[in-house]
Image (cartoon, rainbow, N blue to C red; front, side, top):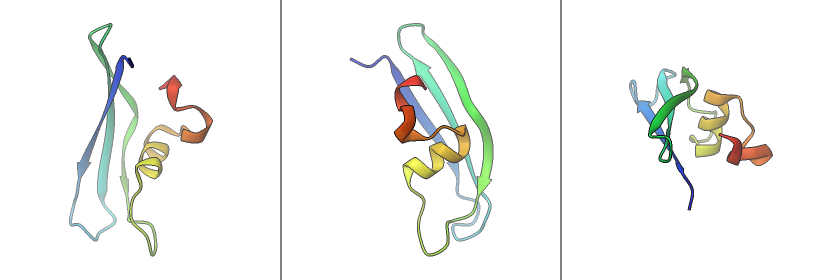
Length: 72
């Protein structure tokens, strides 16, 4: 079983605008502690698209998910 949980905070900020705020926190069940991943940022909806979970995590943490999600 995995011992970590990621939670994403999303401040919509006017649904179609360019000021969607995101933060990510990681909870470690074994250690009973949390840490913030990356930094809180504001994103605009990508042109002709929507947000993907991968896009949000990569923008907030600067970690490429295909490269190594397990190290989070």
